[in-house]
Every structure is written in structure tokens, then in C-alpha cells.
Length: 279
Image (tube, rainbow, N blue to C red; front, side, top):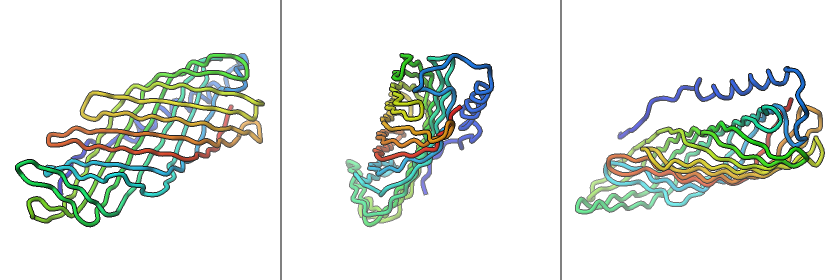
């Protein structure tokens, strides 16, 4: 089996930023009262829920004999855990955190032919297995413009992403059949830009829309991730509410190697639901 793996990721580092943000939020919640911000914003909020998406996947995994390619496939709906947190600093600036994880396996027919020039052709036949995993976390600093029921936000920060792609298939090279098994994993940090709008119909019923983009054009592991969502927040009690939204995420990541490039393209589209606590 051919394998290419990076160092294991430290779980402590993954949630370090979230722990600091949550701790800071409680400090602000217990600090002396500040001037009231816009009713569309909270001093501190924390949301836990899931993103139910209908993914569309296209994967290409490099091997020493050529690339195994999935083509466009739809592996079926998947629900991903998601955590968000927001901390307001003063009345118009704040910190925002977001984390989600996509994981999906696909078993099906694979029709992949990669020309190896004078060395022949890599042909995958029969069934193949593709397994994908993406972890994404972002931390940004936001500026909120406006003080009434409607505010507009601009944000800048950094995103961490880690992608793992594996495949196994029966293939032939120059008429010789055998099983090819391959895995590739890497992670990177990239700059992030965000925009958003919040509108309070009442202090307990609010609308929102957000968009963000991550882009890294250099390095061994590069690509882009774009998110857009819109939804509604409703608080039946003062400090606990529900959030319903609909979002689209486009992921296009490439990992360079000595003999070929591995690429993962995923489009996630669907509703999200959260339980939100605010202070």
C-alpha cells in the first residue's frame, strides 16, 4: 500500500482558540455593564448544531502510476457538527469563531483512465472506494457598522483547514492488474475575509446573512473555501434560542506531490439548525 501522511494534528490546538473565546465571553458577561449595543448583536453568544448538506464531490488522488479520479458524484446527504461563537468588544468590534467537519465515504463504480505517455495507461475498473474528510476552523476580528436595528459587518482573520483523501481501486497498468491503495493528508492556514448583515425585527427575532472566503494560492497545499448563508434567530426565552439557516459551501483544495497533484472539490448545500445561548 502506498501512503503519504503528515504529522498528526494536536487536538489541544484545534480547540485552543475556542476555549479562549468562551472564557473571554464569560469574563465579559460578568464584567460591569457596558453601553447597550445594537439589538441585532449580543455581548457573547455560543451556538451548537448541525449542517445537513447534500454534497457534490469530485476527487482526484495522485499515485505513482497516474491519478485515480472519481468524476462528479453525489454520495448522499450528510449531517456535519458545527460550533460557532461570537464575542463583542465594546459596541462595534468583536471576535468570531466557527468550526465544522465534513466526512464522507463513497463506494461505487469508477471509470478512470490516465495516460502515462510512453509508459501506457492507468485504467481503474470495477468498484472503488473514496473516503474524504475535511476539518475547518476560522477565527476573525469583526467591525460592525451602524447602531440601530440593522448593522453591517466586515471581518478579517485566519482559517485552519485539514483535508484527508483516500482511495482504493482495482486498476491495470499496461495490462497488469492489481489493487491500488493510496491516502493523502495535509493542513494549512490561510487568510480569511468576511462580510455580514444583522437585522433585529425585535430583540428576540432577528435576521442575518453572512459570506466568507479563504484563499491560499501558494505552498504545497493550496486552494479556496467559500461560504454563504442566511437565516433567522428566535429566542423564546431571554438567553436561549434557536437558529435556522440555509447555506452553501464551495471547497477546492489541491495538494502538490512529486509525481502528480491530488485535488478535492466539494460543494455542500443545505439547511443548518443550532441551539444558541447569549449573554
